[in-house]
Image (cartoon, one colour):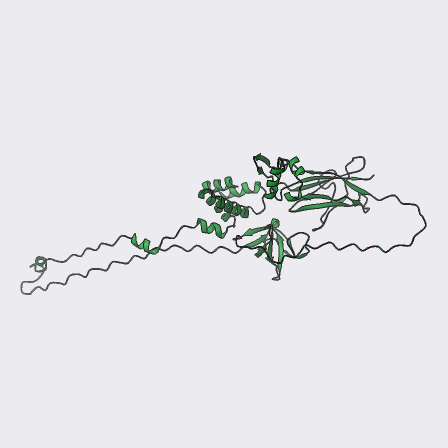
Length: 388
């Protein structure tokens, strides 16, 4: 992103810069540029690097008060400006006595009356230069990329209480601690929450504070306990219904997601965040038409075979998804294990992170997790097998 910003600073080609950013497949690239510029400012990087990054962010509609204050020119005091102005020199020409009594100027019969000297003109005052005031920063707000849900709290487990239409804009009131959900004003004036991954952020957000009194995530209602049934005489047992067992759960390597381990403790994260679900029968044959459901959240349902033979693909966002199977190919209800596919590093074991090349040893993994490394950019393969 710094390289793209520097190239834009050199050639001024905004179309080239936005095209390069789109290839990175980032959510809210303008706000990420603001965050990068503020981090460079805190790290003491060269001013020209910070200016390039902040300038490209501003062209994308994102800025912060901290960067505006840092990059604004220092005003020159009015007294210092007035002292630098050169004084105006005025020359006054007074006629001599000979010129005043010249025979050609006064008739012989008249007594020449000398004309009074011309008044010395007053120097024209030069107004002191003033600096144009820095325009106030625009208030923080979001614009919906499409029709998106508004929820009662910062997470997909909270119930939907409204929506924003594509292109609709609304003010940001607060944020959650991780900064990936925004509290906004709904269409009826009530407060609601929207995920940062489905909106674009405009204006200065450095002054947006963490919301107070965030409601606790809702808990699933307990299932009612079936009333005891009277003992019945033995009957023939029907064959057990279909059950799907989780047999494979694999985290993609950092290289598979489009990144690499750069040396030392540095990790260049990829951009993929997918969950591939494969379904097979007991003999290992791929099955199409099995219904897979997301646990919690919007409970999205996909069918195996929709993304290739025996496969379905879910898009993962922080903190990830849990999925399980609810129906067999013939429409019968099915039972299933649950497959977890988190996209935050502190929900993934060190063994799995090491095996996928995100870190090398426990010390390296501890540092990586403490920095929330590659947050939101993890992909998984899982496989379910039917019991017949």
